[in-house]
Length: 65
Image 1 (cartoon, rainbow, N blue to C red):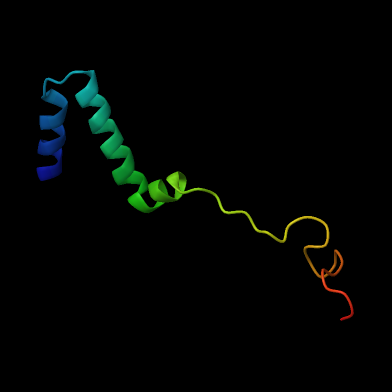
Image 2: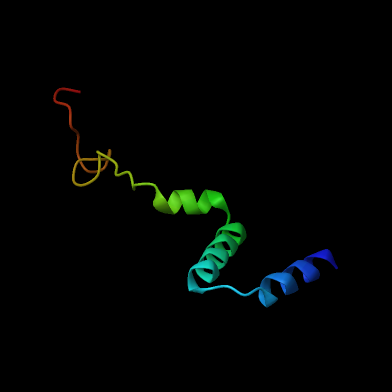
């Protein structure tokens, strides 16, 4: 019952557009989890050994082995 009361309090609260967007953003982060939000914002790392010759089947990068 406490959650229902809190939701009703938030829905009945007078707020402008900026407050509404803040509440929605906090709700989305709470639902999806902070970890996935941080993973989304983190830069993507690329492997250096991609492309032709990057694997054992694509050839060798060393000579004489």
